[in-house]
Length: 271
Ligand code: ATR
Image 1 (tube, rainbow, N blue to C red):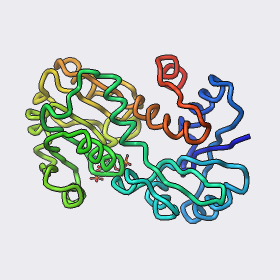
Image 2 (cartoon, rainbow, N blue to C red):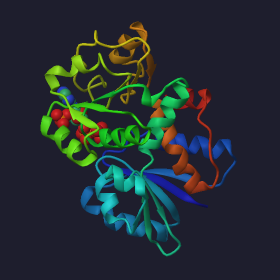
Image 3 (cartoon, protein in one colour):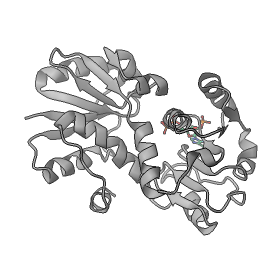
Image 4 (cartoon, protein in one colour):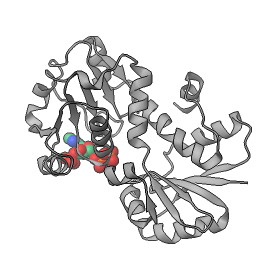
């Protein structure tokens, strides 16, 4: 039977096994999907062995997304653009193909949750400049957002993304983060602020414009302070669980040959 899984360190928190196993059951497909706790120094050895053990592919998560791209024999354009991989598939000869479905998942989630969203309508404000921000910025630019206002606690990381993604990205100082919301018709939090166990989200939100689409990548809790405040201000709030579900769709299809659906039952099961 075809095997797939997810490699990370730590990995116990990953929702991916539950998600893929749900789809396997739902579609009556043979196969299994297992979590694997793999240290950075063992990543290559494990990846080279998996095809020999019946694996058709794997997802990779923190901290392996950049290393996986570098180890791959073949890389998709969108993984190159994002600079990281989250989905690997193995050829019959054991060659590793790397793809990144995070940007796709991010856009699909917004399009499902906010069908009226028009990315070209105005600038987007992006908070954070880590790994997740790369996928978000690449896909917003691809979706024809006219400008991205980017802010990060550590400003040089935002400057580096601007240098890479070009002049449609403008860096705003972290202390000015609240001000950039006034212009934005799309707002995305890619920082860990607001997540259970991480720092509190304290950026002033009174600049949020009614009608703006506000998306938080944090999904524990599902209703973050950012999303609660956005909804109260007349914005359209889009939670982060949907991105996780949608990024898994092309991966599952690649592994098991059937394109699965994201629906409310799945959200209930995974949440
Ligand atoms: P991910 O892959 O989820 O993007 P990451 O690459 O570690 O994870 O990025 C985490 C992001 O959250 C960064 O933008 C980080 O800001 P710094 O670059 O300044 O570290 C942001 N972040 C994490 N904790 C934060 C905090 N307490 N205040 C502000 N930003 C924070």
